[in-house]
Image 1 (cartoon, rainbow, N blue to C red):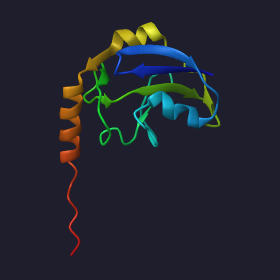
Image 2 (cartoon, rainbow, N blue to C red; image 1 turned 60 degrees about the horizontal axis):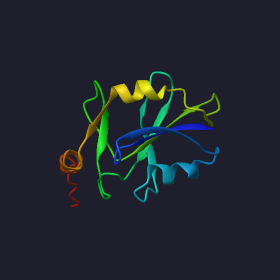
Image 3 (cartoon, one colour; image 1 turned 30 degrees about the vertical axis):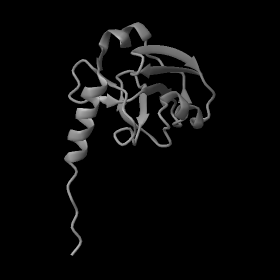
Length: 126
């Protein structure tokens, strides 16, 4: 199955072939990812999977798409889904993605993580 990897560490976008097993996504996201989420779905239906705990892990960089108001910290994997919710080939064009991505530095990603984590409301149990 055709997946697209957005590698913020190396500032690269590439196509890879993976099986339909969701466990193939973890090593592509990298950085010890054990839980992923889908924070973004593109217009063509491609889902962008990213490390759900990326703000807590070692941060090497991140990216945004033009027009976004927040970055994805770390790497991401794009796949599409069928009517039953099963993963299928990504539809996105790699050159189009490259033209829309704005890379952010490790330092900017760390600042974003600090900001985002600092906005979590504190819960007081009485």
